[in-house]
Structures are given as structure tokens and as C-alpha cells.
Image (cartoon, rainbow, N blue to C red; front, side, top):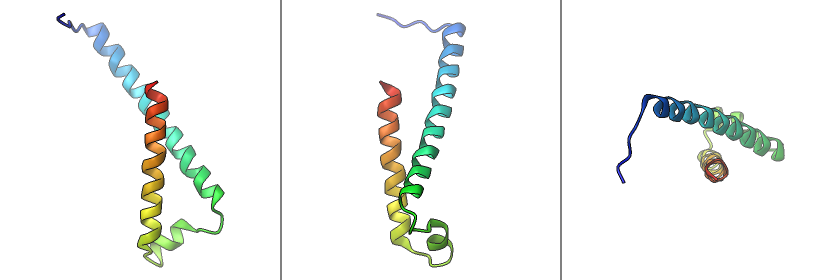
Length: 77
């Protein structure tokens, strides 16, 4: 079957993409703040800026990727 795009459908798709993007970003920030709250002994800003701790950067990157994968699965359902 051939799909036909109309301006109404395109506008609604763009609005949905923006809305889900904003929801995803907000949930990601909330997840990172939750991780930061759970680990009070780890000062991420100090470790990255002053000590140049690459291990902390890798842990933070893995945390952000994990949170984003979970959020993508939740929002896509």
C-alpha cells in the first residue's frame, strides 16, 4: 500500500516528535539527578573539572546511555 503524506499529518508528526523529545529530555535530566542524589559521596563536577578523573566520566556516560535506553523504550511503547 502506498503511503500518502498530507500537511496535516506532517504537522502532527512534527508536533509529536517535539513533545516526545521534550518529555525524553526532562526524564533524562530527572534520571541523572536521581543518580546524583543516590551517590552523595561522588562529586561529579569536582572529579571531572579538578581531578580529570576519566573513570568517573566513563561511569557518567554509561549511566546517561542506560537512562536514555530505558526512557526510549518507555516513550516508544
